[in-house]
Length: 413
Image (tube, rainbow, N blue to C red; front, top):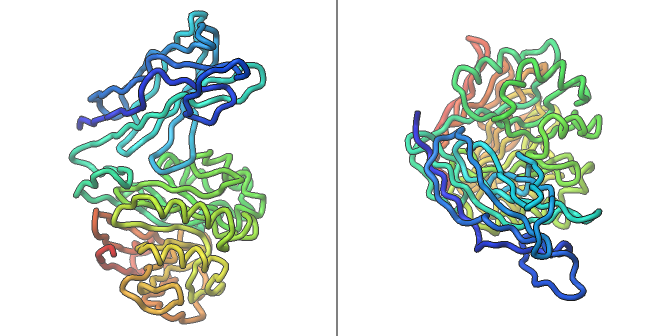
């Protein structure tokens, strides 16, 4: 088994939070202050473990300086993501003591927060935050943007328009099985309406086994039912109904998982919540290689044509030197040259791939958009990306032996 390293970092202990204070804020009690919570034992440590090892941490919770029974949750999020997931929950003893227990995750950078439930109906408050770096020397690592990026390479699969009952999802899933790696799913995952039944009957039988390693975005078919089943199926790691976008580090790259169903999410323009969130993300430290993912192609030769609603997001990404845009919606495969925000060829622009070949019935390609370099609709398939710290390879792998393919290599900008 390959050894993994976990470095845990946090601020000074103990951490004290007033029940009405902002998360992680240390606040001194005053006569008018609400009850203060102090956590003892949540201190900086370093451990060497193997991925999957059971971890534990003994802490003590005091309320106004005295022990009391309180509920504690341990939350986990990938570095750079605002999506927090509860991975453990427990109640302290009468003396305020509790042992947090969790499992060391796979390679990557993770953040952890201990949250203590408020008294009465007060909300839970974060008492401290830690970062855990899991590094496996001889395999791919998914570090945060400010972490050293290893020189190894990783395979990432991309496909969308997948779960149509009676379609070809079983065949494309077999391609993923043949070269295991994370799946970036470009939307329209469960036909016809993205309901719980559609996910259960048309998506899960073929693609359910990839769920722990799947990074999806919703398509228009998910929003036929309000995307409720989509969020129920994947959980809050893929965003929430009120903030249906997120960011994730995959193989040393930064992926911005965005939502092109603009009318359903408050728009995609410069004043929209999504645009503001993305602009804020892009102001932070970035690795050399970055990608964006959403459902509707900005550029397309297919039956739907180019989507102008996402133009502001595309412009923002292009200005920041984003390398790839991965989309679906059109039931075909198409690769574009690097294009700037106006659609002109630019070696510093974004290269878009349209990959709507995951299982739904294929469609004709009636047009020829500016910058289109390859168009395929004779076979379902997946786009197989080989990602490295400063460059990448691509290969479209068809399900049919005589299906068209496409391959190439490129440096990141």
